Length: 281
Image (cartoon, rainbow, N blue to C red):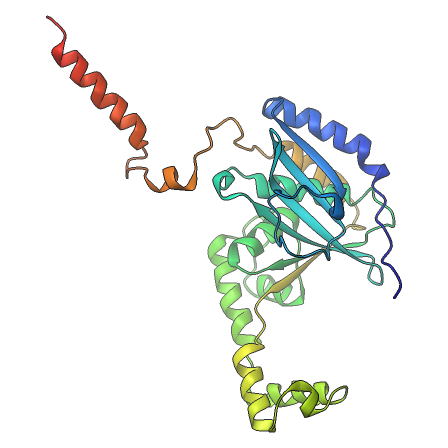
């Protein structure tokens, strides 16, 4: 079996150094960015799929010694494309790290070898679709048809639009007995019913309808589009992340009161009031 070609990262070093300088101006020296071959990732890094070794490279945002947010890439040598997936540790969610790292990752793909022509992102939810289309103009034929019909642009596309598009997409590609039968026929061109583990055609069709509906929406971004490199650089430089905020554990986050005051702070205020009430007038 032939080995997949290794992605050469030497061309991204100067760009990454410049981005780290910008990161230091936004945060402090406890934050840094590193990109490396995926097989060299830290064991405790926050990654999309901890058990998989099918990815090629990883971009990590470190806070101190830990990779708290990452984007992983899987290279397709035939399409000259990179599929990206992202993950942020639970206690760092809501700080815009995901958007920031995606911008950096896609930008750096303009400098790797072999050349990357297309970025693929699989959206499992409307928020991902909204972010990829709104911020990076990533699209596919179904989304292009949808926004054209509704006279939308990336600038006017809202999260509500993304939610409506996901409903439209799910309905359009919902499996029917006819589509399931067609998919089964394609499978049987390569395998027998016995190989596939089904005894009857009815059993196979029922299984396909129940389990093989389209779930993710694949969006594409063409890196050879004129001006895309400059657009991505501006996007990552102007994205404001919230690294200066105190990071709370998920447990403490859930214990916030409705008015946003941390329960620990409330206890401190109570102590202060009591001490004041006992102090001599």
